[in-house]
Image (cartoon, rainbow, N blue to C red; front, side, top):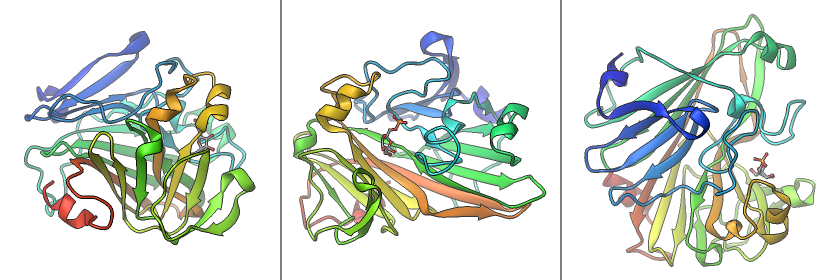
Length: 315
Ligand code: TA6
């Protein structure tokens, strides 16, 4: 019970009595994750500022997934298969691993706070997706307040299976019109607003003035989201997840989403580390690992000077 007895890890009741885990780091940053969906609903920096967007209309009631935070899309992204949109992992109740394995020896575990959540399919799940698996999600808060999500999915079945995946991260932004995404320039993408037609992005950083719903393919492992008004830059670092989805519903779509306020689209941006174009296939006994690491740093640099390597050195 190492993590659970630790004072920096608290298990408590959240909205509607749903269980959640709070991770606290000694300098003041924190993370909250609901067992319902293994859904991260809060990530705060040392100043206590919320870095993730969660809708004021979010419904914390199964089977509705929570609108905002970091939903886990597994074993299916969007409608790319027979399951409900984005698969079922986000509306199942996960369990806490009482005795999680230590970090591998090459990882400096000092001042890291973490919890491991587990998901195994029920008999009912096996009826809709007939593949046995063990999914372990490690949620880690690093000493500099970085949020790391590591998914390990193991095929415990007698036959291979394939899946698509995304960490559907909703970042909190001051004003979507003032935001720029760097790291996806000149890449190919599938446009969800045009039947997933394949196009190539222009050379400039991505800005927002209408609905965007794109799957960027084979992206670099680092993407930056620059919020000019907040003077804050989020850096997304990913591993095992070649694709990246960028989504903002804009005004019309926002009005059609019942659990999103009409104007809330202005304060959110989804940038999602994902594996979509080439589904992951696991043979019996095989394990897949997919990591997303988020950091938030003051934007002391601007366009053209972005060097996520430097930014990440401090973490
Ligand atoms: O990741 C983008 C996307 O697939 C969009 O097409 C949009 O519909 C969004 O996810 C939200 O999906 P949800 O099922 O949570 O309403």
